[in-house]
Amino acid sequence: MHKSKRILAIIGIVLLVGLYVVSLIAALFATKTSASLFKVSIFCTIIIPLLLYAYTMLCRVFRRKDTDDDNSN
Image: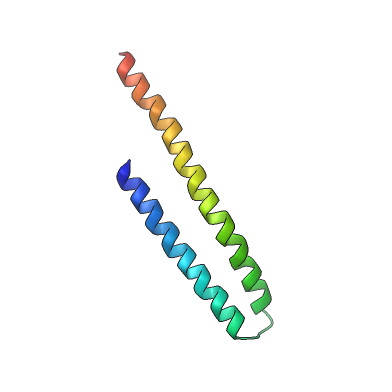
């Protein structure tokens, strides 16, 4: 389980850094799509960590049930 947490953390970091780079580029270049890119980037900056947190919580809940079933035998 520690390995999956580490992998999720690395994926989250890479995604957030990518979003920050997109935000920076959108702020520097004034194009038609820069405002929408910035809004999407800010939205994903909030949503991605929440989804990763929810995924780890679900993994923790379901793994506990698996280990509890093994101990009852």
